[in-house]
Amino acid sequence: HPVLAAKREDRPRLVLLVDVSLSVRNTARFTIQLVHGLQSLFSQVRTFAFVSDLVEVTPYLERCALDEALGMIFGGAVLDVDANSNYGRALATFREEHLAAVNRRTTVLVLGDGRGNGNPPQLWALEDVRRRARQLVWLTPEPQRYWHLGSSDLPAYAELCHRVEIVRNLDQLEAVASSVLRPA
Image 1 (cartoon, rainbow, N blue to C red):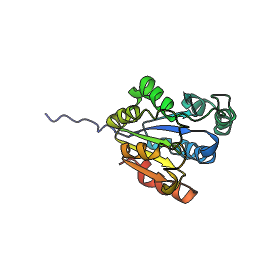
Image 2 (image 1 turned 90 degrees about the horizontal axis):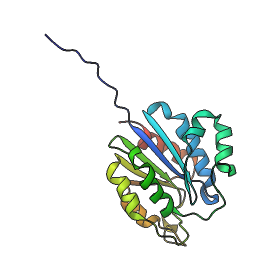
Image 3 (image 1 turned 90 degrees about the vertical axis):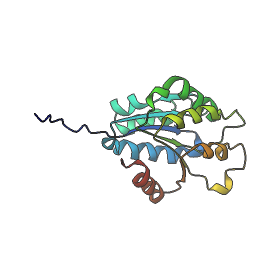
């Protein structure tokens, strides 16, 4: 007697870690809008915003109109958007409190310039995320020639990522969305 089983759809998951500080705010806003529009491609999408503190903003994106949610995130109602960036703190918080959100089906997308203002970069936290994720992709608006200037830890973070993509305009972001975010 043959046994018939329905093939279970195995759509990937997406975790988005977005720096919403002033230096990358426009890119962050558009990236969140793009990912919000692509949610149907994934079985689960979780979005986290940070400057220094990390806050999950998924509930706001699910319950509120997109413009209202973005206003709350970038307007400071959800987290202190005027704080100094601290990537290490945000990554360590994600690793300690939300690492269970990442598994072999998860693409983790980090958006930011990697400027942690001299704070410890906590590379171990990003390394743990990479180990669990299907892929770890970093999006930055900064050209590579600027990664070593100022207090940027992006060169060290880049070594831990599967890919780093420079996204400075809509065409580049669409290309990344096509190649990175599209489920296999």
